[in-house]
Amino acid sequence: MSSEKQILITGATGKQGGAVLNELQGKGFRFRALTRKPDGDAAKALVAKGVEVVAGDLDDAASLERALSGVWGVFAVQNTWEAGVEGEEVQGKRIAELARKAGVQQFVYTSVGSAHRATGIPHFDNKWRREETVRSLGFPSHVVIRPVFFMENLLSPWFLNGDKLVTALDPSTRLQMIAVEDIGRFGARCFTDAAAFSGKAIDLAGDALTMPEAAAVLSKALGKPLEYLRIPIADGAEEQRGLCADARVVRPRRLRGGRPRAREAVRLPAARPRRLGGQAEGLTGARAGAGRADPPW
Image 1 (tube, helix red, strand yellow):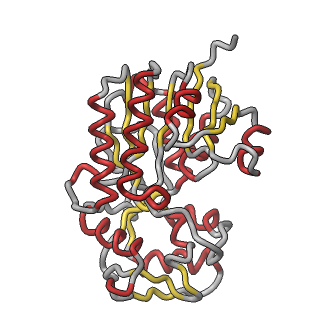
Image 2 (tube, rainbow, N blue to C red; image 1 turned 90 degrees about the horizontal axis):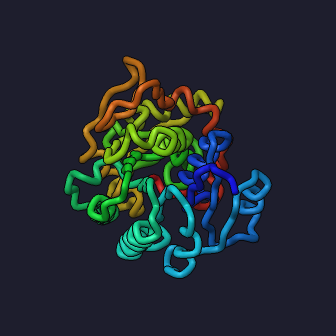
């Protein structure tokens, strides 16, 4: 039997879970990926990388119990936009409680920036309640990471519309953002340096830009002019409403003038998150304007 510690990763075929798994590969762990579609292309790609893929659903306690059997660590992420605010909260509490019962030693929960600020935003406040559940369960070790807005979503249909970058944000408002790849880097460190980060809650951001600044960066990367267009919040989708609330409650740290780093509750040595300007070329590889993107939180 291998002496490598095994980590169960939820969302392994998605953005955050996939980024954490990619970053951890080759660092002395074995992986088990939970997915509702074990026969899908994304799951097959994981199998090709040597990942154990198991069928399971965050709404199915029995499948979670099977997936949790024998694992040392868990990376837990849920999706508000699929499960709904109440459903996401139930899912998060369920996997945390079952993980504790299964004897998991390291539980890493990905929340959202400013979850602890009592914002009144439903899909922020429910994540705070799940954080409190994790803390109350008494894991031998746990870490909460709180990423802010995903840079990748600037190219989604929510925001990129022809030659316009569209949101309901005031042009002078700075929005904190982070590259999903960096979430993977920080999430991975919660396992590779588990003792150092045990019990911590870490807010993560890589840049803080106004939307006109973001449009200028993306214009250069896309090779075409982009203008920022502010739309009335009443006309915006629910995601835009959440974005505006997020920008109001997250106190931005200006990163353009100095070395970028995560805004955090604990210092992360040698961590250099990407600024939008340094990440934009990679972002333009995403499918802009085609289909529904992953949620921005």
